[in-house]
Image (tube, rainbow over all chains, first blue to last red; front, side, top):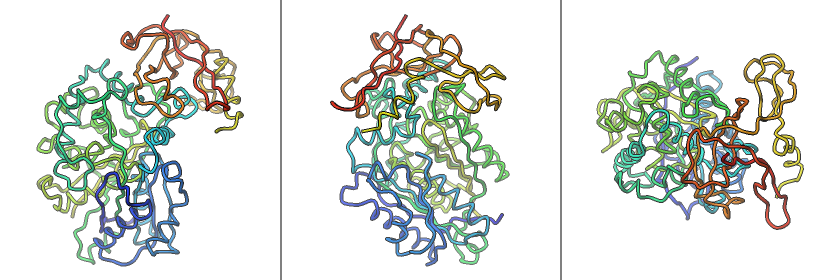
Length: 384
Length: 130
């Protein structure tokens, strides 16, 4: 296997982009990554997208984007694994470069979610759950995570305030990210007084509906060194699956797929979790971040809520989690999220993260997951 | 609108609570599967789900997807039945404020949702406090 580097990153402002279409958002973002890489060559493309069919009535987007990016006839492949689609597109690009099949690969992630109404968007997101045995009974994603939260609170003593503190921390971080959808601060009181979505989760516990994209350019690390670019390597990649029906899990608030994907990625990178300087994780709901930091091994099982309360995961804490603002403040265009996490870590490792820079960061980890954890992918990045 | 076949093919599970019990290790699959997730065996015998159990976790849905909009707010939960099977369903005939982890529930046959005025009416199981 060849060493693989990220030599270009691109991300545009996220939000409700009424004036921009699916294809325009993609092309504008991909162009930023191409310009950043400084090489006008793409051998192959991957696009992570959960549901352009339900959100925009458009499938077959690999070819559509290759064409509109002016790159026809390069191979272009769409990758889908619910909210984990972007992270898996990155992994496919990594594998293609590492294997020697291609030298320069563009990996994009995208979702255009506001072309449908709120109920239709809720339905589209719900297709990531077990449609016949969860969706059939009226379950939604906030409901599934709410049931995980009730279990975590019941068995581990996690408090409602601790959940709120995840949102407060990520909005604090997001207030320093100019590309974030909601770059403003919130207080625990604001979270606790926001409208209920699925008890005990309130609207400020939930990541938003977002339009947006992110893109990276991968190439062999040797090529990156010759180009005299700052070299950030993908040192490890791990992926795992779990049941998509929450009721089929033995432990209702433990993220086994994340645990296994992190183990695999760290083993490949020959690193330990404590070697990482920052973490971009999939905080689709406040409870998710608490379960993820446990599954990654940053804290013991059941201690995630207390860790947030103690400031362990704050910007200046021992383990900075979601310096970008996370899904909560930055936004969550589902297929784009996994790629955007990579963009943030590369910017941080280059020392280009501006006001939210984690000082001296040399190694970072991204964790992206689908549904309630039916799929998970973890990447480890290292600056040279 | 969906083909009626999509719902009638689930009738054995939704109306009659039919599960499959692994002939080798005894694990009960609901819904039935072709391969036992515990031991990999492919032979199963019939099993009818226990009709009572306890609530493991729950929530009250306030923002509902399309076919359930006129039902919100409604409670849902994951129950562990007395035969060890876990399933997800609505919890009805109950004050949402009275929901508790560990509360006893039984399965009842109810209408779940419908597809507009001329579409399929979906029936299945719901959980009711004992």
